[in-house]
Image (tube, rainbow, N blue to C red):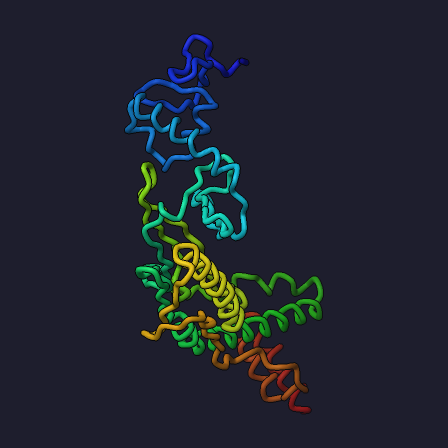
Amino acid sequence: MGLFSNNKKLCPICGNPTPRIFSTKVEGTPICKECDKKADQLPLGTTDTMTLDQFKAYLDFYEANQPLRQLFEETERVGFNSFSGDLILDQEHGLFRLKNDENALVFEMKDLISFQVLEDSRPLFISEGKNLRTFQSDVPEKANAMAPQIGQFVLMRQQFENMENMARMLEKQGGDQKQDRYDSSNRPERPYFDVPAPFESFFVDLKLNHPYWRSFRGEITAPSFDRDYPSLDSYLKSYQKKADNLHAFARDFIHMMNPGAQEIYDGVETAKPQAAPQVTPQSVPQAAPAQASDPIQEIQKYKQLFDAGVITEAEFTAKKKQLMGI
């Protein structure tokens, strides 16, 4: 069986050699790789509390699940962050899986008690009896409230870039003898937009009535703002796309639970699901287009460079006279 197999310690389930290192143990006894693959379909840590008899009973259950695994055909998928698994639907046969693995256990809709989609801890979609309740998200409102912060940062970044461009221009004009004067330590630090977004993660929670799975949680990282070029429009578009995808999933999942399900939105039942509300960003100050140079503005920019120690007083005075036509 190879260098990494132990022929002296055989699997208590099937009698095959067990791994010499990193072996999964049941009741303190290593099991073989084939049995371990089946154990991997259980919730993390389940085998730590199982007896060998309980594990053998699970393997019987796993084998009985084989017809459903053969029947399963994927129609929709919700992908989660690493190690969270995937929620994969087979709408035609009313089945679902919790892992992107053809050997994973397949669940029937009778195994599902309820589900919910959250924004951090705030509900967005919840199965309520035989229907779907949809909640109004406050994320667009919170994001729009950040418009002044984003606008202020855009202007700050624009000012920094203008100063950097002028410093590079002066360095180029000054030649090698002036290179030492433009020490980067004298320049202002590059600004970054480190303001937290309105929320951190979407969560999809399932409550199950299953011999081995009682619950499941999948996490999807929420959109975030670019640290260099934050855009409210980009953030809201990314948020809307993820929210719409989860809305579509919630509708499909509730109809798998109950084909006649209705969507309850703001307390009103509708036979046809309503479209998710669209969000539009408020106006955010953007970088101004290039215009003809204004002498006063140019003098102010060079004054900033002088105050920051990038240019000397003599250079600032000479440049001011040049711009004023003196």
